[in-house]
Length: 310
Ligand SMILES: *Cc1c(COP(=O)(O)O)cnc(C)c1O
Image (cartoon, rainbow, N blue to C red; front, side):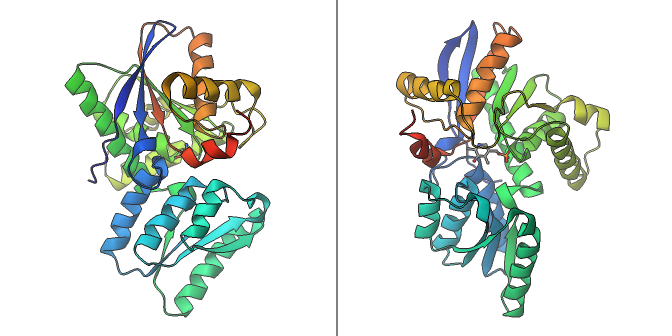
């Protein structure tokens, strides 16, 4: 286990609820975030194997690609990124990816799968040993990273004699959520773990999480019924708005407010959308007198992409 242990801070009281935030954005590597927590585990694998380059996938906005390109560059390991042509504008993440010297191959979204396979074959033909990291750090290793995060939350609860009845965060591919849900299933805890979808709709979104949960539990030979697994997956798709990366004035207002009041940066694609979604959820469901934990999943460079709007 890699000890990350990001800090949990008390924010204050929101509609009679006690409110806490886990600062994954402060994981001390390349602006942190959930992609740093996952990346540390992927590179733990890479360092133990005989690999000499990495291949991954993501857009020019991708926090995942920033982290992977940084971790590869620090090892002087070539990093190949397949990037969707449709999302290849210049952002703070893309500038950092360039700084790290990653080699970008652009492909139309519909050809991405094929392009990845071609790149891996080409590298092998040249006698290289590529390691493939799925987009966003999806898969059992990414899930494991968030089982570890769940353990940190448990340790905090035990030490501080507190119980979080609700945990909220931004859910994309659902790997972060799958890890937290596996943690909950392993420990048998009572609480609501609510992923605020930043783009995907149900049933697709929750099905992907279910598959990730099944895959991880199977790899660890832990037996739980499908019913048990499904009942812990709450993937709320009410706050996706116009889709991935699309904000609205209320999200921007939330970002402004959280920055001014607490000095914490959120962004409009992930954490700002999730924070706003959480506030809506708490009002709509009339959640009262609970201890609530928001997991800040990172994405600080995106805060700066948004800054002229907020
Ligand atoms: C990727 C990302 C997410 C979503 O994580 P998943 O594990 O794909 O659900 C949330 N927040 C930030 C800042 C991210 O970069």
